[in-house]
Length: 471
Ligand SMILES: Nc1ncnc2c1ncn2[C@@H]1O[C@H](COP(=O)(O)OP(=O)(O)OP(=O)(O)O)[C@@H](O)[C@H]1O
Ligand SMILES: [Mg+2]
Image 1 (cartoon, helix red, strand yellow):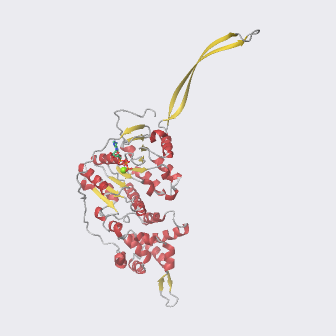
Image 2 (tube, rainbow, N blue to C red; image 1 turned 45 degrees about the horizontal axis):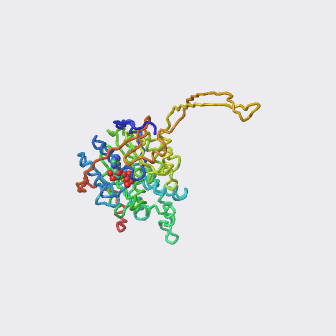
Image 3 (cartoon, rainbow, N blue to C red; image 1 turned 30 degrees about the horizontal axis):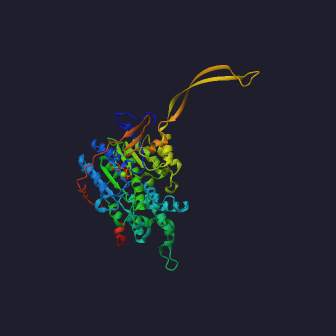
């Protein structure tokens, strides 16, 4: 390794550079959690806000976050989102923010990769008509309401009767509505054509329904939720999102996509408002590749001007281009290019080691080679070949200086990092770090966190009116 071991040198990253984001890469057991706790601790100390999306969903990790906040007098800023356990969660509704287009793409991301383009087009037009008219009604809605509008004729007719008739959104909704209805050949009355409905939305309705029922349902359907991401960023709150990656991978991944896409809307709004969180707001994204989607590349650019630092953590470089998750090489390059700071803990797979070594770059090395030579030559005697006579004797000395580029950090150096050791690759600097061990006092086992009872706002209430039996 070149000279990247420095003593008595703390790593300081300026706020300006923080908004150029940081990518973390770590195989398991390298000291990632400790490092994230260190980052969170510093952020809490300086009064900053953070979102920590944690792939581990355990009481122990929630307790750690709470205690860290308590120790820095920030307990009152904590919000917890835990779709696996409503008793350990604040409420949050990822459908409240964003216009009809944003909402549609947020929901369509659920079926990313799946379905043929024609079907996607149909579903997306339908979704746009529904979210458009709901937005125009200016009433909050939830997953149950969306599901009702995709499956229940009474709910659909209720919107026809109560929708804002003077708006373009209403007209679009009516166009959509009329396509789904056909006159009954015997009675002549218009009836919902179930087959057409099924063709339009496939299983999207039932997937949305799964966010309305069960544990996740109790967290995600409030019309006046306790957590609003835009507000959280403005107020420097400390949001802990527990993703049940091990227990309920599919729903955890889908939920994380909703969350990040809602975050994108919030960042966009902050940008529009010309408001900047201060200090730089931090978004730690554990298990990033499992819920990343191509549309996220743009978030990295937006976040920068909104003074939001994104901190995605991955386990391997190849996960960033995982086709099964709808990602590509192009996405991987965008993320690598848009994160000016990188930190690597011990790595295991050879590809990640290679790539990180290349990212760290090369340094110009001067190598000097010197050679000494002794030579003797013998010439055979003319008349007696057995007698050796010295013909000539010489000495040579050569010195050549060559320049070559060598890896600043060799691939195997990443493999040989110890727990708590890391290589930081900044814009101009490469450093080997020894991350201090954060002392966590977890003796307080109290899982109390701030809860609010907000005045309930009236929502569109379609699921409740027509579908409550399903809940
Ligand atoms: N900087 C450090 N100095 C000394 N020990 C450390 C350091 N970081 C972590 N450790 C120790 O190594 C162990 C693993 O650390 P940590 O939980 O942070 O790893 P991890 O990468 O998050 O692991 P996992 O992949 O299992 O989540 C811990 O028991 C911790 O005490
Ligand atoms: Mg960990």
